[in-house]
Structure formats: C-alpha cells, structure tokens
Length: 281
Ligand SMILES: C[S@@+](CC[C@H](N)C(=O)[O-])C[C@H]1O[C@@H](n2cnc3c(N)ncnc32)[C@H](O)[C@@H]1O
Image 1 (cartoon, rainbow, N blue to C red):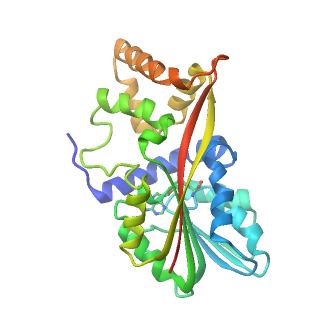
Image 2 (image 1 turned 30 degrees about the horizontal axis):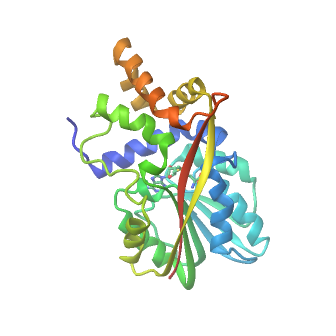
C-alpha cells in the first residue's frame, strides 16, 4: 500500500482540483444550497466592512470572494488565493475584472504578504492543508493586529451523511483509495478539534457556531449517479476497476444507508453540519 507523503498529497490535490473545478463550481459553489448556505453566514460573522482589505484563502472558484467584494466596495481590496489554476480561472471569470481584486496562485502553507489584511476567510479548505498549523501561522502573520479570521469546515463525518454514506462503504471495499496515513478530511469537524487547532497558533476570542443545513440530492438514483459523476478521477478509476458484483453490492449498502433520510416521495433529505469559526488576531 502507498504511504502518505505531504508533497504528493498536495500535488494530487492540485491535480484533482484542476480537474473538478468546473463541476464543483456548477454543482456546488455557485448554488447557494445545502452546505453553501454557509457562504453568506461566514461573511456575516466576520463582519466585512466597506474599505476592508480581505484575503480569501483557498478561494476556489471565487464564490466567497465575490460576496466579499460586494461588501468592501470600491474603497476596499480583495485577494483570492488558491493552488488550483483551473479554479482561479473560473474565479476570474465569475468575478469579472476589477481594479481592487486580484487572484493569486499560492499555497496556503507557503505565503506572506507585506501589507496586512483586516479579514482572512477560508471556506472548506483547512482540512486539505496537510500542515494546517503552517497555514494558520501564515494567516495570522498576514492579519492586522485588529484583524479577524473566518473559517468554515464540514462537520464530522457522522454529521454529514451525504459523504459518510458512500465513503464509509468505499473505504471498506477500497481501503487504499487514499494512501495510508492521509489526514482525515473531517479532522477539524468537531468544535474541540477546530478550536484547538486555531488556538495553538495564538488566535484569541475564538467562537464556533454550528449550523445544520439540509440538502436534497434528489432520489437515490440521482444521489448515486451524481456522486459518481462529481468525484475526482482517481477514485472514479478505482471504483470502475471493481467487478460488477462488488459495485452492485456497494450501491446496495449505500441505498440501505440512505433509507432513514428518505421521504415518502423518494427524495433524500440529508442534514449537513457546518462549523463556522471566527477569531481575532
Ligand atoms: C472545497 S474547495 C473550497 C473553495 C472555496 N473556498 C469555496 O468555498 O467554494 C477547496 C479549495 O482548496 C484549494 N486548496 C487545497 N489545498 C490548498 C493549498 N495548500 N493552498 C491553497 N489552496 C488549496 C483547492 O484548490 C480548492 O479550490
């Protein structure tokens, strides 16, 4: 079995995001549904004001960036930063050319800015940084002493059945779908874990709000079909390499898992926990 390696992990993530960015933007980020109701909440909670300088770290296709830009107005300045060139390309198109907006291709674990920010946001990305401490230290160094940090993360896998219903089964049938030792993507999915990670870096006045959004992926067939359509290529290839009977079995277990979330008309309604943290420098 392959062993986890930070550089490979980041390279693989970059390739994955370059590949899925257009699908991610269309299906998720640009549609303010389910977990993406967090975008407005995050901006409300960090209290972006007119004239602010804001960094949106791991901005992806720029949905948070766009809402921030509306808030800071012409006198403000916004930077969206991400490792995925494909995501940045979409973010540029989605936001349009503005004199007070820049997009930079940077790694959250390796950046610094000479001019400090009033606010740094980071939505659904902290768990992708293998060394989250490094990224948080860079964020803190980039903030003014009066600055505010805002982070959104998905809740623990038990609180996000949209993912766990499928991934728990996949990890049982394809244990090497990620290399051994890969950091869990829900490792900051509890208030305690998220608090501790941010506190260690020195942030103060940490507050974490817990939201339960609901998400309707359609009927079971839609959920299954779309999940497979939107997953990244490496996992898709592993799933496709299984023999038909195994794939059928996985599908059936997942179907059973969704029964308790299925309404009379066949629609699945999943609860989806999101944690939003705010902190001061
Ligand atoms: C789930 S998306 C979130 C995008 C955006 N914040 C949003 O809310 O739609 C995760 C993003 O993290 C980016 N990312 C992953 N690792 C990164 C790193 N080390 N540095 C910067 N960005 C990274 C990916 O390229 C991807 O665009």
